[in-house]
Image (cartoon, rainbow, N blue to C red; front, side):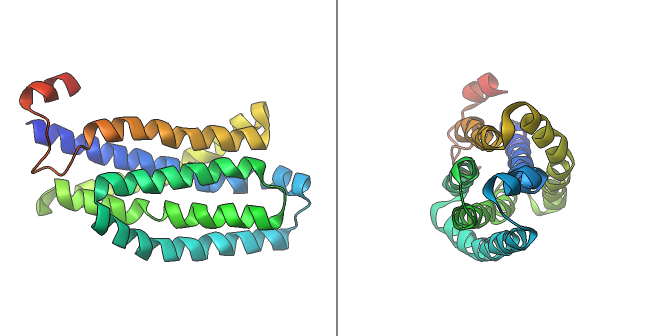
Length: 202
């Protein structure tokens, strides 16, 4: 029963990470009119930035697939989310196309880790007969994140401006790490939670 509850918490956290992932990546596009005005950038510059993110994201898929196999799901997600949260926060201090392209590259590289990490977590925690459901829950985070990112970013931008908004949304990733590190101690076969401890968690 304990492992059954825990695995649904794990996949829910992965879905939440995916929501955060999409909010962070969409923030620039939503605030682009003001960002481009302040930095003196053009639509051509925006196309360059999009390509930088896309190429970095494509490379990051393979890179983080290897990293997750090497250091495991728990630390792999920590690395991915720490780097992407720092990257999105650094958007708040950019002043040129070059600096913005650099932080978009690191954002794309690190955000790519969410997908191999989610797949690995699902394989570790769910039997074959339930993996499609777990994958569906995780993937729903992409749709939810895409839907809610516009109103959330627009609201934050209206009250705090674009630089502070990048700091705020980046900080959310660090908050996510708290339940992740508490709940995901190890894989399901060696998880240290005893029934007594799990009663406190659940």
